[in-house]
Amino acid sequence: MAESFIRLARDGDVATVTLNRPAKLNSLTPAMLDQLEQTARELDADGDVRVVILTGGGEKAFCVGADINEWAALQPLDMWRRWVRRGHQVFDQWARLRQPVIAAINGHAFGGGLELAITGDIRITVEHAQFALPEASIATCPGWSGTQRLVRLIGASHAKYLALSGTRLSVADAQHSGLVHEVVPAIRLGERAMTLAREMAAKAPVSLQLTKQLINAAAGEDAAATLEAMAGALAATTDDAAEGIRSFREKRSPAIWAAEPHLPDPP
Image 1 (cartoon, helix red, strand yellow):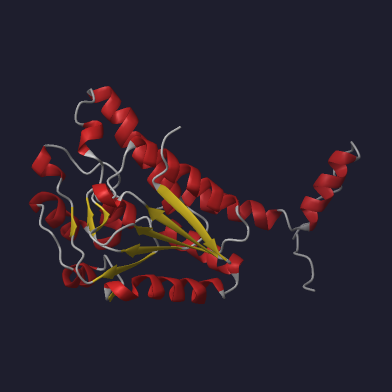
Image 2 (cartoon, rainbow, N blue to C red):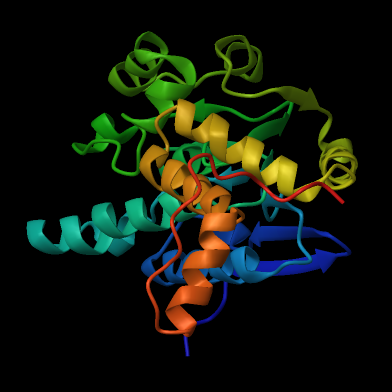
């Protein structure tokens, strides 16, 4: 059984997920991608969790991306299937998690680590962190939405600057570009992330989750699924839906649909 490098802790209605491989700067392996996926599934199914904090173990790095030793020897087909495609699947799952996600960036976020950080809805960071897309320096390209989700977040110009130059952004530049929202001393990162999570968790949970999905859809993140889910949920509350279910169970044709179906009266 693979060793777990993803730690999940629950504190009331807030869950904290930690990349726990500090000796390797929390660099990602195929097993860690699998564990991130499983963790996202658990969180999405947990009705008691209202807000999620995503952070890294140690003081140096949030995540420095994919572990080069894990993919350097892969053939092109395996590179596509086991790394690029797989990473996209997992990161998309995190970006579309129904709960708000706070990325508490405890150190450097490079390559896939930066791409993971931007799956969060809110990003707070320590003062010493740096941000970079260094893939071109090792003859590859950003593979986990660094050329897509990052463009939607900070714009094509800033994304090109990062990806084409390999420059490491300071927290000041990252905040100026809109990449991060808050900068705090390292000693206060956990406290600030939890305070923010508690403030969010105190709000109406369904409203919070729906608002996240609507904003994601406006930004091009899973818009079709959001629209269909909300339309289906709304339709399910109408008199037409009740009649449709009754007629199905009673094995008869439904009564004439109402010309203007209305929602139930409020309690």
